[in-house]
Image 1 (cartoon, rainbow, N blue to C red):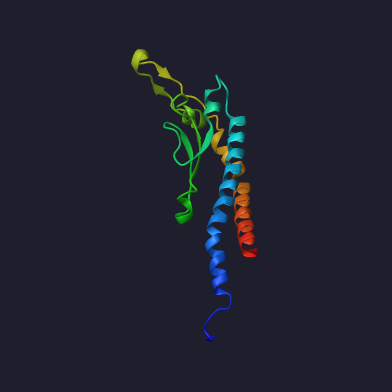
Image 2: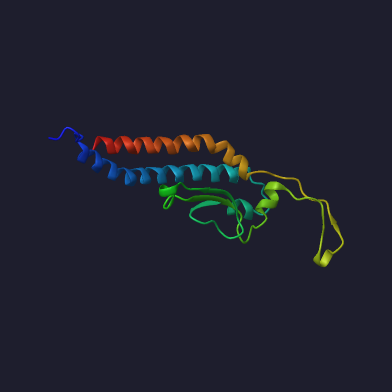
Length: 156
């Protein structure tokens, strides 16, 4: 055996080749769990008038519905291709999610009521507080899933 060869290199390479699949499955499961928690909290914090806004809060793999407010996309270089999850509020029916979240400034009304002054609305944050409250536990859960997947692959 040459002095510059690594003992068990072939076995290590086999384990490393299985790692992305195991990690991806574990990360997907953890991300779905975290997204469910954020959605559940945001729905509990959302103001309810007719329920359309609360019903519009959700998550999806990939792009959100048109007209929605998003928290941003969670994606990382090579892992991100199949691991882009988006938490959103609002859709084409409940397009006012961002107005509720951030409020509106006083402004002049156009159209049928042209010239009338609208006093604006106060912000009723529900979306970003849910994210901020869940951020640390989300990182922890996803990190735990990655470590657990790595340990499982290492045992093989």
